[in-house]
Length: 259
Image 1: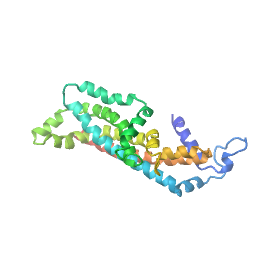
Image 2 (image 1 turned 135 degrees about the vertical axis):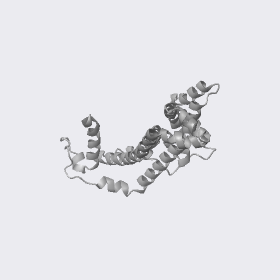
Image 3 (image 1 turned 90 degrees about the vertical axis):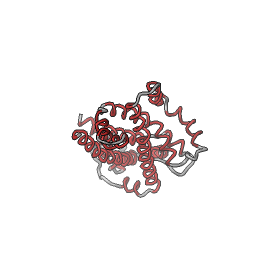
Image 4 (image 1 turned 180 degrees about the horizontal axis):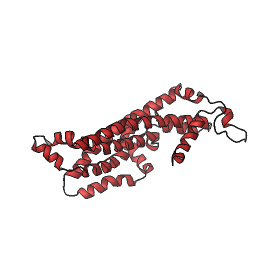
């Protein structure tokens, strides 16, 4: 299993360090390791204003999508779990069924609605579009998290004098952090890799996310070493974000055990 997981990563990393002779072999077998490993592709990408701008745009979009999705999805999931009201099953099914529609079907109405609102050609518009995709998942994941937390914890806090909001932030939320951190990772990955909404919402602007930039680069058939270097740089922020959020996952798990 380690070999199956690591083999594609090794191939991607190997190609990113390959010189031209190791990629264009003239029909000979491609070497297992480059003849002359070089960082030329990385230096070229990191010195290109277009790539740096796309990376910053992707990072801003993904982080904003995470923030908005958690702000909207977590309270909605909490209300659906803790409070009972008529039509709750229909509402829950409706929220989850939004993801039944393919993304390409939603692009045209989203662009039509976002254009008069000034959300086309900027980071806020793309992040809002990504929230249409991620909020149903956040609600679904957070509902499972809150259902696993006994309501007695909040009731005991309220008996001791805490209000409902205070009990939620001081008791329930710390225990729910592991599941919410997993939801945050999912939203970040979804926004970081999303192409269709970013492409249509930024089609007539100077901004572009990394997937959109990669599509533009693919139009002139680049060599494998350049594509591999882009793939490596695309993977680094995801790995870093995962490690950062894992800290909060451990903190949430510890808080839950203490309570």
